[in-house]
Length: 385
Image: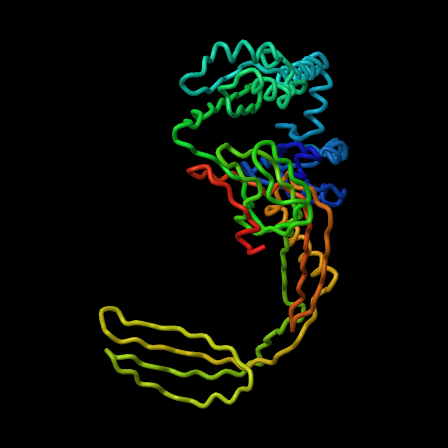
């Protein structure tokens, strides 16, 4: 690669006593490589572009026939491009046009279930600005989604993705309305523990207020004979810990070792026992079997070791633990949650350094729970209050 960057020339030299010419090149301080003899009177080698001019001066003082076979590398390529300025300009213009064209939508694909008229959806999407030959960077996908959901009651969700020059629209149809005769109602319950911060009961009766402590499964908004709707925001806590050893114990072999050999024949074991007097050791076990014969030879080797303690770089260890903990907790916290407080703590536990991060957030903890019969539930009665 470096040779290609610097640029080199493939040269052939023909004449008698070529070794003397090579020696003269070496005395001149020129660097040649990939030297190859073609015939007894002809050789080939590579030389860098910057050294080629000096080679010519050496050649003029000799009686050898020198030919340039090929010039390779970026300097020669740039020289050829510079000579063809119109070609270079055309390439730049073509690349610029191609880059501009890739910013426009060329196709809009719509995936809709049965019962949704694709033609009507396409017409409305085109009106809202998502159509071929529209710059994809000026398309407001959120605005299009909101307006489509307001216009079409039968659409439950719409997804718009843009890949390259293609736009993909996926329509999800609303499920059929719950029949009144089935008397299905819905409560909003807590999907996790938390401290209530705000209750917005759009339909149904709010059973909790700001400051209440709720547990997972508690009813927050009772629907009664209707489908409860609303949001319940609460303070919740996420905690993640990471730990690693800060004081390593290194086992360094002293060079002393002992072996114990065991021979297993069928169900019997014969052992050549030896006393292992080492205070600290590590052992390795190898088992050798004889093909088609029920005999195994087990060799266990004990290596004497000295235990040495080594402290890790505390600042680096802390940084690594913190990065791992925050990477893990990022997956736990919902994207829509609002972080209100964060605490970090380092603690030494034996030979380990432990890092704990606790993040307090405000999030919507309500989720729907369908019930039959339309009966509401009172948390205070359940808890004996």
